[in-house]
Length: 128
Image (cartoon, rainbow, N blue to C red; front, side):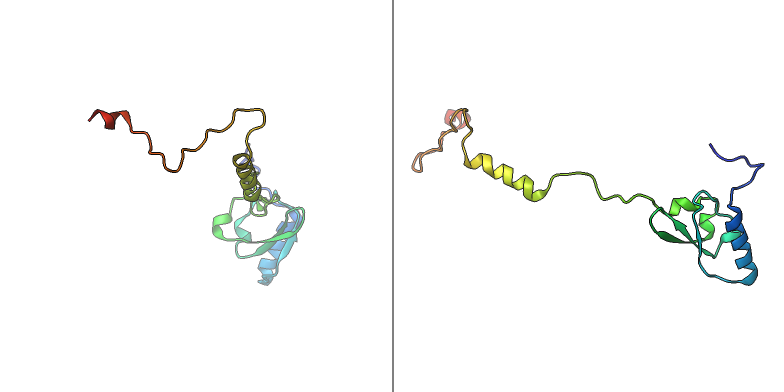
């Protein structure tokens, strides 16, 4: 659910104070904040704000396109390392093992045709 228009966007008081002071002094140093839920407002454009993601500080350079978004959207808290899958080396080893050894307790594999034997003719070819 979104925030009421009557209330306006939420910005942490300490962060807002730092941003306004930086704009008055025309200082462009980096500010650190834990407030991931603060909304980016037009006064922040041109500043760099470091947002804490729980482990490290992620610098976010504020542009006009970011206005209206939350600071936490640009500092991911989880690292995607890929879906679980099979290891290629482990997958190749089991495929080679069953072909080399006959199945235990099962029927013996079909014998290959002799080297000098001719292949069987297809029924359609014999009819012509």
